[in-house]
Length: 108
Image (cartoon, rainbow, N blue to C red; front, side):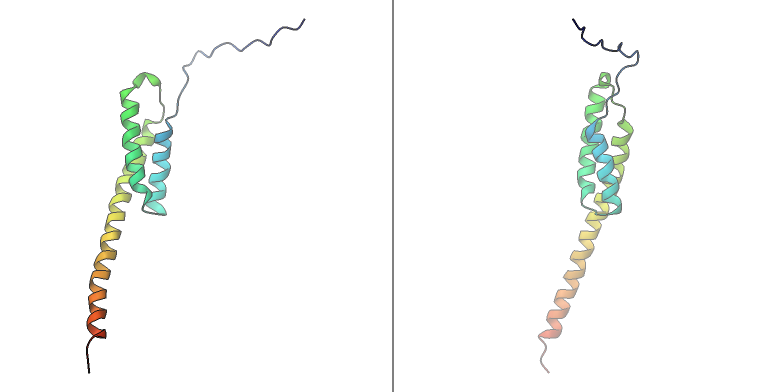
């Protein structure tokens, strides 16, 4: 008769959990700041939500609170950059379209 394999003894150290929203906020914050400005908004929201969840449950043992904070900051900067880019494009077309309309409608 065979005996079932024995499990290893439990670890004396507590298990460390990684909050998925904090890691996603970090990745999206970096992407939103360097490549595409749109994901900065999502990084800002995910970072804020992850910080709230980590702070609401300190006994859960999340180890990446810093990821949430660092992801939230580039998310804010990326969002401001994105809004500035949208305003710049709107101002450009707001000036160029009337200028082209004025030159094309003039009669000689």
